[in-house]
Image 1 (cartoon, one colour):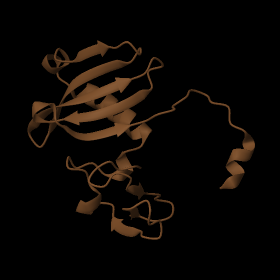
Image 2: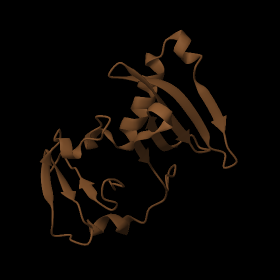
Image 3: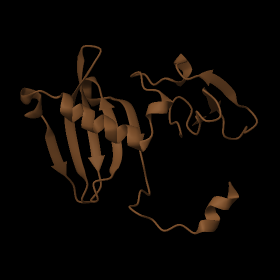
Length: 149
């Protein structure tokens, strides 16, 4: 996971198979400097309460389905869908958190793969964002690529 704020370039590494802690490299130019934090430590939780173990693509897709299912009939009428010139589809969904109504903005590409998920607070300020690039359906990999690991 690459972090943009407070330090652009900071990296969070979380692999539950190796450790329950989040490894943080706050400065990319100092790769030897690694700090370990508990998964629920305030230093590695987003301002809106998100944790690194819930940031991967499948978790975000599950969250989209959960958000849709949780909406009542009145709230479903508040969903906005927008298309842009790049054939991206954006949904604006009402989202409840801590008794506040916010907007969750979902952007999908032409293949309906998620590209960006943002939680918007008051005045459309982005509180949390997840973004993916280079997603492909059924890509072909050279088998040698996995031998490096």
